[in-house]
Image (cartoon, rainbow, N blue to C red; front, side, top):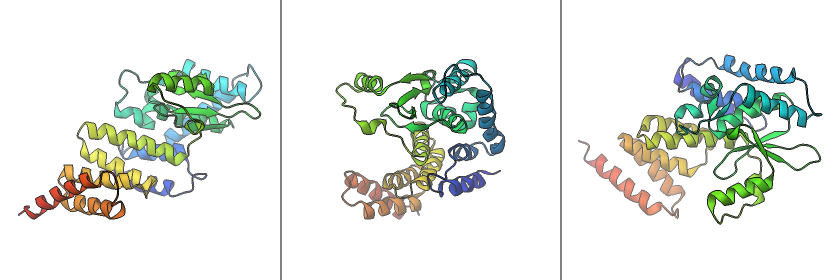
Length: 278
């Protein structure tokens, strides 16, 4: 499996509606571009094995609460899945195969593992993109939602505890209900790719940053910010033709953008370099 074939598989998956989108497979095909020999089917089957192991364990309370407790205990206590606080920006934390192998990751990839196993068990779960920290939302019938911090060993919180965390983290921040709303599978993939884009850009790895942006545009085709960033990355890579195309298109589509003047300067730089290329 080549990187281009992995990209094509990823593109086909994210072209589906969100309801039909298989999050686990899409995240694995995202990783397969970085790991061309990746056996996606074998890794996907691990979710089934994890779910089967949880289903075989006795419950200490009726489902779904009892099943959730067993799931959390199995993943975090028995298997040791945990957050990588020591090296948060290691790119491996953003690739699902690495998270399954190493049992260590960042909130969003640990959440994907939790969601994929939980969904197989029939648990009412969804990703929650709380500012600054991704959570798994648990929506038991007839009861208020709870929020699972997969980075902190499956700690279960209510909304008041999450709001207190936000106020502590961001000072005078006023949490709103929308900060605890479920997000789509497409938004989860976009957040994973955004993490990778920033990690690689910080390292000056423009080729990998470009690959992340190109996949972001597959997930969110109308994202003008990604069109702009692709043009800037092309410029950093010295691909002047592609940089001029993307930056010009961005300014055509967003002439009143707050950064329009800065992008005009970048485009002028690209135009000057293009004129002097010979």
